[in-house]
Image 1 (cartoon, one colour):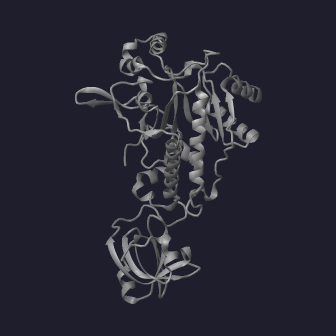
Image 2: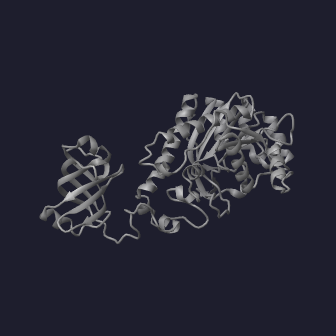
Image 3: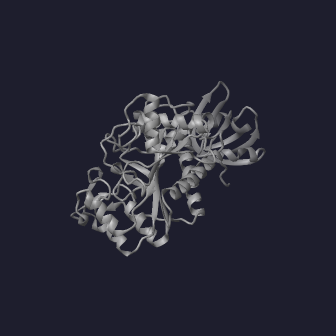
Amino acid sequence: MERTYTTDLPKRAGEKVHLAGWVHRRRVLKNVTFLVLRDARGTAQIVVNEPDILSKISDVTEESVVEIDGQAVANPHAPGGVEVINPEIGILSEAVSPLPFEIFRPNLDVSLPVQLDHASLALRHPRRQAIFRLAAASVAGFREALTSEGFTEVHTPKIVASSTESGANVFGIDYFGSRAYLAQSPQFYKQTLVGVFERVFEVAPVFRAEPHDTARHLAEYVSLDAEMGFIEDHHTVIKMVSLAVRHMVEKVSATDPEESILADQTLPRIPEQIPIIHFSDAQEMIQRATGEQVIGEPDLAPAHERWLGEWALHEFGSDFLFVTGYPMRKRPFYTHPDPARPEFSNSFDLLFRGLELVTGGQRLHRYTDYVQAITLRGEDPEKYRAYIDTFRYGMPPHGGFALGLERWTARLTGAANVREVTLFPRDLHRLTP
């Protein structure tokens, strides 16, 4: 018999069904046992009152894998309004170790380190699953948005010969006797491919050897990258970021709230036009409001990002805010300066609920500009030969952005730590599981 998923049971009331999944919970009463079966889509209640079946499952542990043939019948008190009676139960695989925590509870009331140590079990919890379904929906929205705008999805190497951003923050590896590194970003490749496809995007892991031990940093995370050619300036890129984020929000909002962790969260508020503020104006506003001396600083502190997030929500009803024009001394060498104010850049960050989510901007596109920018940094252009040679052969004005999936998902779900929304986190202290 073809397998029926638990979520399809309401359509099968009155029919014979074949289910398969995990024993989520057993409730043993005097003359009947209620077995709750969980599969990848939900749960179903199985009613067991035949003596021989009761005997068969008397020692079956929670999280054992079973298959069930039975009759689906309507019951308004059962999950989904349907339960399964007269079951035949086959045991496919038994859970042979005691569980370190109870999966059937509405919430996992154990510490995050314990959850991560036992990720193979903790990820089975419906609320943990829901987080990653939302992440998947977000990526689907990102892909749909960029594909609809003529972008080509690409897959670039994650083992590279040199760093293009900060050599101190790369993981070195032995590559058949030569020194190589795990890629900090696909920056070099996505710029190169603008010269091929004009518009490209990638969803892939990136690696940062930054010794941060905070709730917002990981050594490996998923980056949603895009690069596009023939732009006017960084505002062209901002429009594309806005489109991508809007699609991501729409895709998330289309998930079933009964199955989503967002059932008790607020969906992101995104106005028709995401507000934009220049970095210098933001600093002046923060200094006036807080009395802190921030003008002249090259970046925004996390507390100031949070302040700006609250300001954007209060003034514009927006959970998002673009901050443009960061100082050139804070941006990578490939960033295009503002022609009117060269000390500032044609770059931006997108804050989501007061947290930096996206970094992007216009890039340099002329070979001579790259040589000059690197030389002004006091470095030898030869060190970047593999990177800048691309620009010898004619590149259009272009720009792009990168969005951190884990930060997005954490802000989306209200998680306090990005490790809560990462399947198998990699950080200063964790290399397994």
